[in-house]
Length: 148
Image (cartoon, rainbow, N blue to C red; front, top):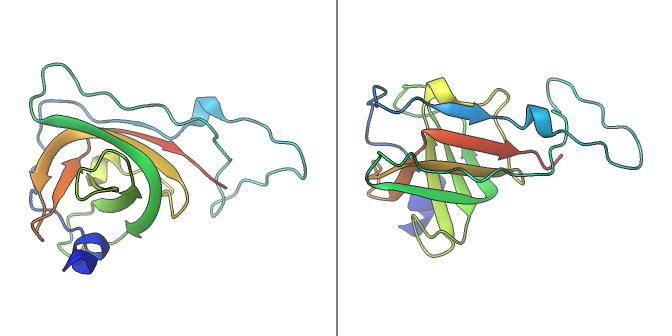
């Protein structure tokens, strides 16, 4: 049962009309140079971003939580077809289970390109039950730090 919870974190809500405006930060202003061979950004390899900005809940939003951590699973294509993405994080925030947090990112907030395994994300938003009964954050704020 836990395997299904972690590997298929579908969402329950199709609501994309929240009062809070989504924000995304892909770390564009925080890119840093590293020593060694030059990083060659391209469509499959975005520039490395070392710093992960913490996400914060808007003060007016109730039921809002934050989580951050390293991505261990990405669901790039959502089975229900609404265009959102799901991320499973190793996280001390324990939103979904001890050591795990699932983040549901609606289509309008999806970073392009999507972060992958090993990248880190920070998200804030209300916590709802997903289609498998898991607790997950439905992100309204998202920050990304690329590992590659």
